[in-house]
Length: 379
Image (cartoon, rainbow, N blue to C red; front, side, top):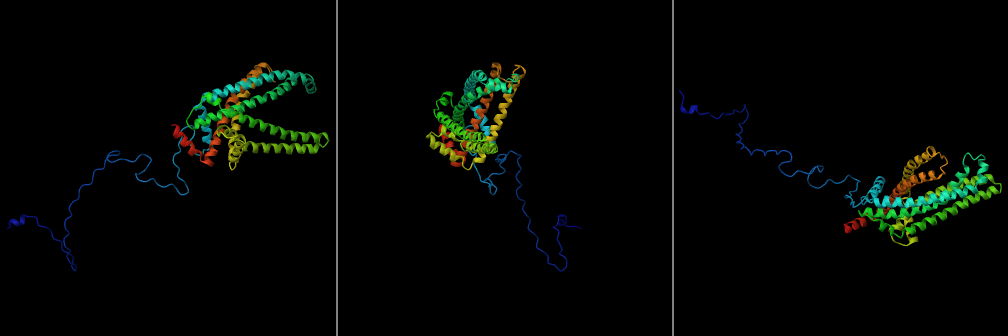
């Protein structure tokens, strides 16, 4: 028979193997609280912004990489040293920021200059063609090549070229003012730009530079002519070749070292010669960078100009039946093409030169800090 206690479940006992002691029974472990539910993405606590990884302090930059805060950009360029692509982008932004000056005023000045040059070329061409009849007859006795008209047109173009050169110089100085204002996010009006009297300092510097080149070229040509006159032909050829190479190298070097003179004269407000000396010093240590960027810019501007001028020349040859491009209609067609080409190229070159000046000063003098302070003041 069984007793009532036999129906109650008994706690089983554990028998240790022979030769070992029986360990005491372990106390029961109380169950802990259940784990908190995992919220779906975006729920619960704050989530870190995309791209930041985790909250907390930012990771330090890699070794050798200096940390730089985001540059302020109130206008067409960020206020920090620029790369070549940023300079070109800033030049296009300068045109979009103030098209009334960068295109409207530029087109007006270039139109007046090219029109005056075309009138001078047309007038001088007739006079020169009559005066050069004897020379053209020796080269083209039948007159079928139109040598007299070509020589007269070339002479007229040479006489009228200074008009375009001076107008381009004036325009470059005026556009630099507009670009400098666009850097701060401001827009210069046509009236404000035209009141920049310092543009005549740029014209004076251009005239002095041109006079110096006339003296240098005159010395080389005079030496060659003198040697040739004395029957020293071989020496004349050697002097001519070496002189041409010397003038080329000197021209590249001098043009690069004085590249920043126009923007310095327009923007710094100081006297003539101290400003030229300072602009000369600014190019020290940046010669090859300035030379490379300006050379590439000049090539691009020349390609753009040729894309416009060459079709106009073909039109005069094919449709106006004027292969020498000396008739009035040809001069008008080519003149219009020159207006468009000169407006585009001068605007682009002036903007790049202005931004190169600002970039050099930001690199060497911390101009970006002053520009940022000026932008915050005028905001």
